[in-house]
Length: 370
Ligand code: CO8
Image (cartoon, rainbow, N blue to C red; front, side, top):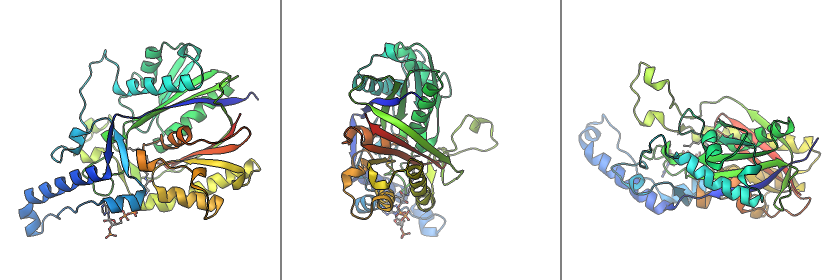
C-alpha cells in the first residue's frame, strides 16, 4: 500500500468580523422592533413576545466570541437580518468558486505544488450554492486543472469525508494529487432571527492537498480513517429543488438551518467518544499516544467532554485546540482550521482530525507527521 499524505492546507478568512457584542445588539434591536410591531397580539395573548439574547449566555453555552462573515451591514441590520450579496451573471465566477480558488492556492503553496500537478478536485461542503454545474468543475476550470472534479455534501462531516474520498481515489489509482475544498457560507443558511441559534455560525473556506509521493515539508501521512453515519432529524435544512413543487408555501425561515441543540449534544457526544476510542484501539494506540486532537468546532463544551474522556480532566488545551472563539461554527471546516492553525506535531507524532454533527455523521482521520 502506497503512502498517502495531507501535504498542504489553506484557510480563506472572510474580511468582516462580528463580535458577540455587535451581534447581540443587532438581535436585541430586532426583538424590540418585533415586540413593538406586534404589541396588540402580545397584549391579547395570541402571540408570545420575543426574548433578548445575551453575550454571557453565548460564551457560556458555546465558547463562541466572534465570527467572520461574507457581509456584515445587512446581516446586522435589525430590519433585514441576513447577509446580502450582489447577484452574479452565469459567466462570472461564483462566490463559492472564488473563495475556493483562494483557499486552494494557499494549500498548493503550502504543499509546494502548482495547479498543473493536480489531477482531481473535490468540493465538499454542508451547503452548495447550486445543483450544477459542479462548483468543483468551475474551480477546476479556473485553476486550469486537467482530470476530473465533483461536489459532495455530508453536513458537518463534509470536509473529513471529502479527505477520505480523496484518499480512496488515490488508493484506487484514479488520481495521484487531489484538492479537497470546503467553502462554508453558513450565514446564508442560518436563521439570524432565532435566539437559540443566531450566534452559532461563521463563514470560511478551507482546502487541503491529498497526494502520494509527496515532497512537501509540511506533510502528514494519513494512516487510516473511521467513518460512521446515523440518521437524525435533530439538525436539518429543508431547502431543496423540490420545494417549488410541494403543495406548501414555505416561509423563508422554514428553509433555513434548524436544530434541537440539546438532543444533538446528548446523542452525538457518546457516539464520538466511542468512535475515536474504537479507532485508536484498531490502531493499537492509547489516547495519550495521540499528541493532538483537532475536533469539529460546534461547541466548546462538546469538545471538552470528548477530550476529557480521552485524556482525563487536566489535558493541556494545546492538545485539542479550539478556534470557536474566533471563527464560531464553520459548518464542516472547523477541524481543518484547527489543524491548519494550531499544529505542533513533530516527526513521528500522531494526531486525529475528527468531525461530527448533521446526518448524524462522524469521521476520525488518524495522521502522523512525516
Ligand atoms: N441568549 C440568552 N439565553 C438563551 C439564548 C440566547 N441567545 N438562547 C437560549 N437561551 C436560554 C434558553 O431559553 C434556556 O432558558 P431556560 O433554561 O429558562 O429554558 C437556556 O438559555 C438554556 O438553553 P439551551 O438548553 O438551548 O442551551 P444549551 O446550554 O443546551 O446550549 C447550544 C445551546 C449552544 C445550541 C448547545 O445545545 C449546543 O451547542 N448543542 C450542540 C449543537 C451542535 O453541535 N449542533 C451542530 C451544529 S450543526 C454543524 O455543526 C454543521 C451543520 C451544517 C452547517 C449548517 C450551517 C447553517
